[in-house]
Image (tube, rainbow over all chains, first blue to last red; front, top):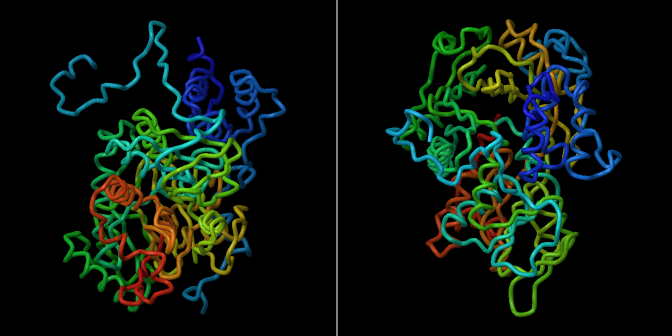
Length: 98
Length: 420
């Protein structure tokens, strides 16, 4: 059954995957992210993080308050390279100066 | 046994976990995230990154299993979990070229030897030059690489475009290409080493900061951790950029410093990019992982020494600017996330290995300048063979800590190809 409960839709991560991760000792939410791939797809955890965290709390018998969210990574939403490339924050290398 | 696979000559792991009656695979725990460390051990490895775990794995393979790995946080928390996964043999010194030839071979065998798929893919490394000076630098290195048996060759820009049709050749004057360089997925490397080392008897403690280290009466060291003290006959400091802080506990000065490097990943795309592509002028590099993501970075100068791992818009904008200039067709590809990790910068660009002066049982394995991941397989193997009683490889007499103070380092060439 746990193999059919999807926690992360972007990366097809199930409750069984989470159980497997915890059994091997990968119990930190950052480790679970790396071991299962959850939260690394287009939503970057916006849809799945809470679902995984509550199940992780249950499986490791910790109060939910002890499970912090994984580090939030910029950009806020998937952003095309061509927009970023026009940003004035870019460093200009000597070979681009004219 | 997989049906119809009986004649396969690949030696499958007999100890690999099997599904139970309900179809669920139950695995033994690899990591000890709770509970006290043992009172004693033969070898304590501080740092659960790829270097420390490689040493633990190869030690266990040689029946040295009274080994404790002590990791401050979670596995892959440091640079081992933050790098681009490149594995190349295009270096500027003979010793590093030869080391990396052996590392590539170990990567090729990793899935069979260690039982974990690390998605190793040999699509080559393509270095692009935008000036005659950069071409000369590549040609000099190629000459040495060829003498070592690495098949790197210089390519005209048009030939580079045969390999990567998406390149805009404006301003490109030459390229070097070695088809047997490659990329891998870093995290499973750690899981594989950890799982096998633990299965053979080593113990791996995560979430265990070391807050003290002192010589023990009668020899060895006492390692103070948040989960108790462990007395070890020998200690290996494999904490990457944090090595100076660990060594300082016993008064050993390690002259490396952390340099933050940023990196980012795109949305997954259908496979199209075969080699790792790197541009000397900016330190830009990018490759396509087996997940389809374009993973890459660029060297933004001037951030100085920091343990900070924050992300900047400056990096993302610079990367986007350089990458879309080199491959304009990538302009519509979306970046999903960016992160950062520290390079453990050493004064001469080479690692620091072997015991510290005055501390014959305190060993260093640091200063890899952003290339510890690709060097870890061979360095871990050579380290273990030596600690298990074998003869020390040349790297242990050359890459000493004392080379920075006794002048012995000046007789060897500096590594100047720490790029990408």
